[in-house]
Image (cartoon, rainbow, N blue to C red; front, side, top):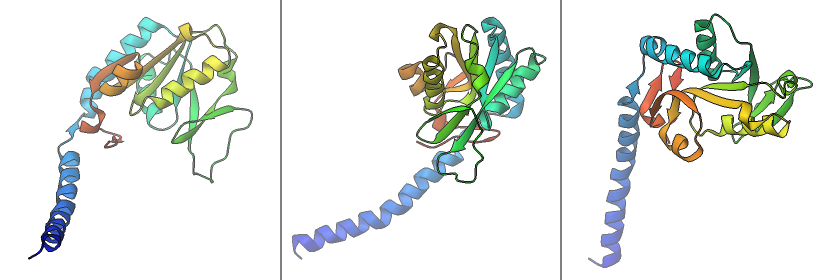
Length: 198
């Protein structure tokens, strides 16, 4: 038997065993994620964020349509709707069936086109809190912050908060500034959907 036949046989064995191994690895990664229950989020997470909002005492809050607004709504409800909330609209960049709001500014991330209500840009000297559900990449909060600064809002008046902070993003970008739980995002599920596997 020559060397090339042996190498081909080894390559074939690795290919046959590698596919199922990869599928099994992904399956176990999903199966053994830690679940964070609604009960725990409501009893610990939302109460914790509500206290942090009160400390910041923003003039208004900005959130994002979709998952971010879930957490924001729960927090604001806990505070008896004390703070006004403005919502940015998230549009998947490839979505052609989306009515773009008129007279709103917008910016792009790698995944979204984000529309910002013009009214929030008028309050240059107000304290603003950005709330999201969790940080996968930190890009959404980071780009919104840059957008607001570009339109004349002082960086010192901008604060960010998420229910769950990705350990890596927190250490590199320091986003968000406030959070309830710091985790490796790929290991957790939240009640409203699975987080992405890296």
